[in-house]
View (cartoon, helix red, strand yellow):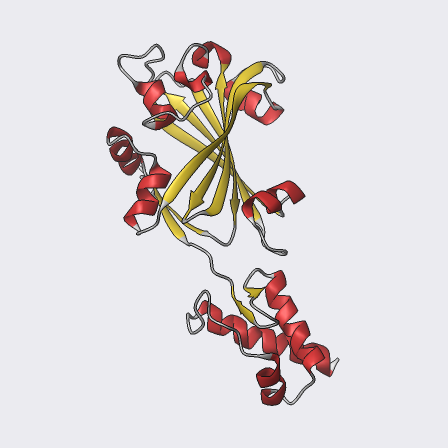
Length: 254
């Protein structure tokens, strides 16, 4: 019982140093020898404490056997209608613009574009029958070469067919540029986003793709974009690791 309490006390002390910024990403954690002497305990007890922090995604194994604070880019995402429109008018996505503003190097890699049956949750938001054919654009978002987000964009076939949304290539200005272009075939103005948020543990493929450590949850965000007529024109299904973002939503209440 005493040893069990002690390994948690060791973990709590190091966790506090990490969260307070006294230990920065990439810094080595105190060695097993140092911790064993400081707490007058065995290395086995120390290892249990370090293992607890690794399971939380705070520590990773460094060179040799020394643990270090897990390096990870942290990006603060500001979501407002005003900054979305400003970034859109500048031909940039909100993700890229916010990451660059904070000194990071963002990238969006296109993984797949094609026709798929609409998942039930997506179909419900698009107002179509489940299983109806839709266009999907699958991407992975990276910051400083670190995977930060998986994002699948879904579009009704009647809206996307024959437009760049259905082509297997990156779109300058993003999907919303195609949807809102006054010279394009879609010509819809996006006026509202509705987000449904779910917190859960990642699946195996999600953890592998996003390099999510054991014990770190992900947020699944279903974001539906509506045009001025109230029709859904896009559903984004995103998987976001819980240890890499800070989100701020500004909600104007009339």
